[in-house]
Amino acid sequence: MLDSAIFAWIHHLVGWLLEPVTVAMLALLALAVWDVGVACGERFGGLARWRRLPAPEVERRARRRLERSDLIARLGPILGLMGTLIPLGPGLAALGDGDLKVLGVAMRVAFDATVMGLLGGMAGFVLGRLRRRWYDELLDVMEREREGER
Image (cartoon, rainbow, N blue to C red; front, top):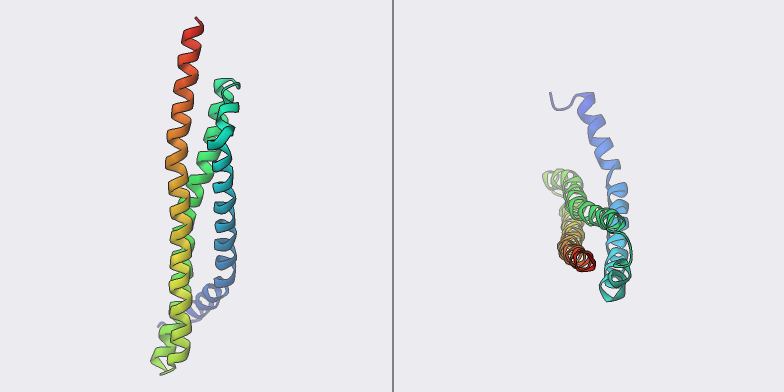
């Protein structure tokens, strides 16, 4: 039953996904590094310039950046898990054939993918938490300033 054509087709499709998943994970990590730089710029001067903007514009910018952080936080572990599971199938099959070298390579790829995915997820999570606090503080200050002008 498990040797049917559909399972063979799925096996080939999943095997083909390892490279795109790895490239996507590396792109996500590059985005996370870039976003850390943007967040540093925000923290050390950028948010002070935002105070001159109208509140709806600040909220729009904040929402977009928080969405990006949330996307990184969610996709990192998903891609890491995919990068973990994809090589384990052939690795376990190689174990059944007694080929420990292939199993070793598959395990190394799997664990590396796990770590990279968690690293991306952690970066996105931390950025999101910090940004939420920064943006809330900024909007509170802007609101107090508006109330003081009245």
